[in-house]
Every structure is written in structure tokens, then in C-alpha cells.
Amino acid sequence: MLRSLITRIAAVALAFGATAVQAQDQVLNLYSARHYQTDEALYENFTKATGIRINRVDADDAGLLARLQSEGRNSPADVILLVDAARLWRAETQGLFQPVKSRVLEQRIPATLRSKDEGEGSQWFGFSTRARVIVYDKARVQKRDVDTYEKLADPVNKGRLCTRSGSHPYNLSLFGAMLEHLGPQKTETWLKGLVDNMARAPKGGDTDQIKAVASGECAVALTNSYYLARMMRSQNPADQAAVERIAVVFPNQATTGTHVNIAGGAVARYAKNREAAVRFLEYLSGDDAQLYFANGNNEWPAVPGVKPRNPALESFGSFRTETVPISVIGMNQIRVQQLLDRVGYR
Image (cartoon, rainbow, N blue to C red; front, side, top):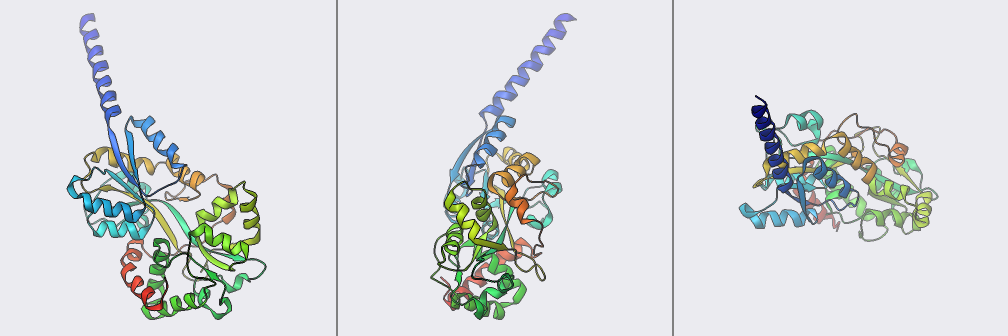
């Protein structure tokens, strides 16, 4: 009997050891458009918890999608992380994802932050959110003149506005939402008003727009909230001085609500390690990972009830968000680009 017990214990130990070795040998191929140093700990913790190593390929959203299309069935990608709703929608329509049916993800991620489930599961899931806000020079601009997106096109703001390229995904998503709110004709008129109010030709990234307001190059600008929060938490004296010069407004609080975009992920269509890929997405929906998004990169968690410990996000307070589905915003991108071409918004 003792010999039998020892044999069973040895068998269990052997099986456990084989499982651990198998997990340790697993590699998850991650194609990521997230270029944030704070995400390193996020990936390391997944490996510590599961034994699954992450092999990461970094590029921007457009580069990743082009690579996936080129690789086709031979793609090694298991998981794809993108940082804009328009890109997620485009990748879905190009057949680059596969549906995922996960009780964990369905319970954790709100339906408005994932693609529509056609019966086999959602194609992609949002894991963090960021607001498209307006920053302005406190010395030159009254808040009432910039408290809606629509007012950015008003004559009172002529010669004041700075933005990055109109065709950048962050702006395309905002404009796609505005198309839903205003309709094609009014959206075209609004976009033409933005062009007419430019202080200079569109250039740079969102941080550049904030700095341009602080330097006096312009007086009003659009930016994603996490860029501003990053500067607010910076110890760089120049960043601190810039933040002191400007103010922020969450637009359209009395009407449609502030536009909110997402960063999200999906399982690649030809994923070789599907089980590990789904496990990784479920991990990103966990409380610890959600707090990494919030406290590390100044994004709001996608999962309701997760409370960030981030003084910059806390200082923003609560605000009303728009309710246009992310998928609808994505579908409006082609029409928006046509409008941008017509009004000369580069």
C-alpha cells in the first residue's frame, strides 16, 4: 500500500513538472502598437503568473495591419494590441481577427467597448479608455468659447486652433463620432471651420499641441487625455510650467458627452497558440492589469468598478461620455476622410 501511494505521488509530481515545463516552453507572439514603458511590467507579470513567455513585435497600428495582411496564413501573431477604435474596426473588416467566446471577457468588458457578438463571440475587446479633450490658454481664451467640439469652428476661435493631422486615427475617430451626431453636411461645414481657424498647419503629436498652447503658438488644441495627464505628473520643470499655463475642458457635457476612444486587443485570425492568446486577453481584463493601464499610462480602466490610484486622473473628476458605439465610429472613417479631402484638412 505504501509503495502504491509513493507511486501515485511520483506520478502526480511528474505530471505537474511536465505541465510546468510545457507552460514555460510556451511562447505568445504579441503584435503591439502600444509603446509605453510601463507595459513592460504588465507583460512580465503575465509570464510570472503563467510561465508563458511573450515575444513582442512593435510597430504602429497601420504597420501592424499591413504586416498581418502580408503574412496571411503564415503569420506567427497570436494577439494583436491596437490603440484606436478605427484601427480595430478596420482590422475586423479585413478579417485579421477571430471571434472569442469568453465568459470572463463578457462579464468584465462592457458591451459598448467590444465588437458586436454575432453568435461566435466578439472580435475585439477594449481594455482602456482615453478622452479627446480640449486644452486652452487660460490667459487668452474663455472656457465658454471652447466647451464644445462645435465651438472650435466658431469665428471667435479664428487663428487660435492647433491640431495634429486630420487623418490621424485619434482625430478620425472623433470626426467619425461627430458625423454620427451632426450628419454629413453639418460635419463638413464644421471641419471647414476648423481649417479656417488654424493657427498653423497641422503637425506633430498630441503632446506637441499642448506645448504649442503653452508657448503661445496657438491658444486652443485637441489632445488625448493621457498625454495631458503624463505632463501633469512629470517632474520636468518645462512640463510643469506648460501645465500651469493651460486649462482643460471635457467638451459637450450638456449635449452629446465627451468623445472617448479605446486601446484594445484581439486574437489573430491564424493564431497558433489560441488558448494562451485568450488567456492573455482575460489577464488584461483583470484588476491588476487594469490598474497598470490607469496608474502606468494614465488611461481609464475599461472594467467598471476598478478605481485608479492616479492623482492626474482623479483631478479630472467624473464626466459625461458619448454613447456612439465604437463600431459605428469605425464605419464612419471612409466618409470622414472624404470630407477632410474636400475641405483641405491635411
